[in-house]
View 1 (spheres, rainbow, N blue to C red):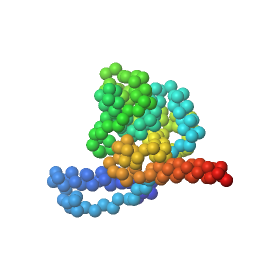
View 2: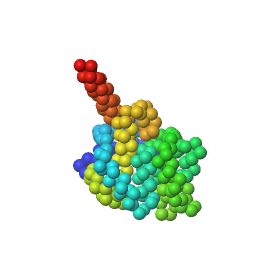
View 3: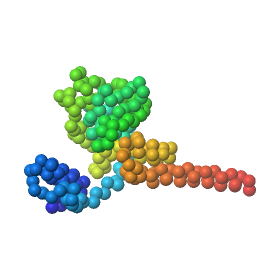
View 4: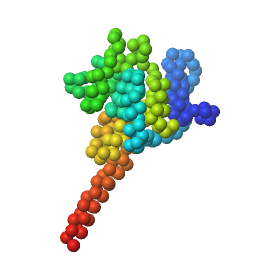
Length: 237
């Protein structure tokens, strides 16, 4: 029934929560339900292979819209998503103590259920963080109104998306993570293993969605070499 009104991913989350509730009830003796280890709940198939990207004109409009955004917190939040590929939740949790200016790294605490890791801080990200205003008494880089951990930035990000005239199905934050990955993959200069580390993917499976972009870049480079040799051959004739 849920699949009629909700996405497969949402239904999967609901069923996963149900399994945890049953497991808790059994462990506390609150239910006579069967052992949750033997409980079979069929999960819906989730197609999460969608890769969002922006063409050069759309990206230019987005950068201008971010530049025109009066809300510095929202503008820098979106810049960090684009320049580092960090997830929305990772940016919500980011504390100043996680930013290592001396070594040039950003510590990401428990990325999407994984182990705490770190990613290099590129020059663009460093520039943003060094100039970003700090809220007195708050530990967070992008705090909520009370100085605690932020829970949403959807209103501001959607306004920026609208001003930039981006496609309706483009998710303004998760889409920026895809843009970051797509740009690196299509450059042909970044190994997939390195990209996996930058995106803090626990396995290479999620990173493989960008492999075709790398292949396209390498194919174009090979075509350039072929064209150069073809022109050189004409010169001899």
